[in-house]
Each structure stands twice: as structure tokens, then as C-alpha cells.
Length: 121
Image (cartoon, rainbow, N blue to C red):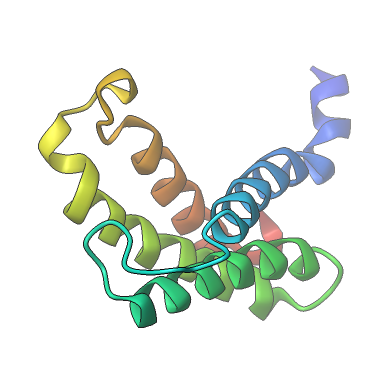
């Protein structure tokens, strides 16, 4: 168990980097924005893509000092995932295999954790 205690100060990196990478990937993959996507107007897609990229950058940058960046990045994740669950995933049930809420819910809770704990995560 002592080994796990020595890992504790660094455990946030797995959660932080996997969530940031997912948001950076999904934000960047929306470009180039050529028209409406997912039933949303172009302006909203731009805001969504920029929010996803900003959240990813903030989650990584926040680890190097500015706790507010970690918290704000986590809050952006929460807002984006609430929208994704409500607009896309909820109607498909729980299973990720059916496009359900399983994975988006995990990202939402991860964002909420980082927002609440900041750099104490």
C-alpha cells in the first residue's frame, strides 16, 4: 500500500490527460466547419469546438500552477457534456455501444471532479 501512497500526488495526470485529450480531439475534429452539424447552427458549432479545445488546454495548463484553469476547464467539460447527454445520448439509453450516456456521463463526472477538487485532485 505504501507504493500506492507514493503515486497519489501524480494520480491526477491520468484523469486530467485522458479527459483533456478527448476534448482536444473532439474540438479539433469539428474543423473545418462547413455547415450545420448535429442539428446545430454554424455559430454554435464554432462555440462548441472552441469550448472543447479551451477545456482541454485549461485542464493541462492548470496542472502547472493556475488552479483556476483546472476548475474552469472542468466546468466547461460539465456544461458541454450536459448538453451532449441531453441533445444526443439520453435517448439511446445507457450503453456506449448504442450511443448512450455511459461514456459522456463518465466525462461529465470527471469534469465535475476536477472542477470541485482543482489541483488537489
